[in-house]
Length: 247
Image: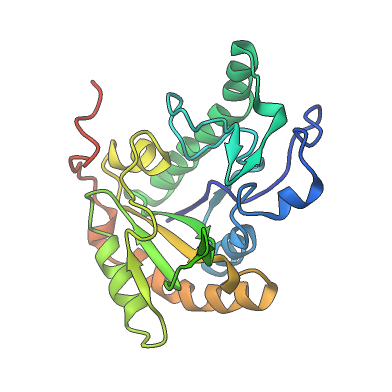
């Protein structure tokens, strides 16, 4: 099994300063997925499995977007103007792709390949994200949600085990749809036919050590049970809801 955390950190590399933003901006969700670094590290240690954590802020360039996505480098995010991203030259755009976006995805590829070679099986890939408790003043009631495109293999057992807890309200493709062309799951799992799921946890539930510990304790046995299922280690390509795969 492999864990991914596309938006784990809020750091910027040397030479970029703060992109013209104040320090408080980097504590917001627009800079990273709050709580996900700690949760991912806990789960990787508890399960003794590899994890790939992105080491730069999504404000620099978003690793969970395709290279042709207009939101790859954001000029405005949730009302915050990002001076260091606008205007941006073509050469700087390509530099960020070559220096940050592409190396992250190369690391994901390499980790999946090495895990397959070591285990002799198709890996199960689980991606971890977090979402805000409210959006534009509207509360989000879900404690967590599973996002997916059309490959349901890992999705249904994950939903079933999470929903077995009567104290949890678990969403299915909420508050986002999991079908996004050329995002991380599309690129590394949908196209090659690798079993996968993306789990979003509400940020106020994992915003401190206690919350991260609680959710790691909750998720570790669920992930371990999924990993023990032979059906989640088979290669099978499903059509994407975003349209045909490129040749």
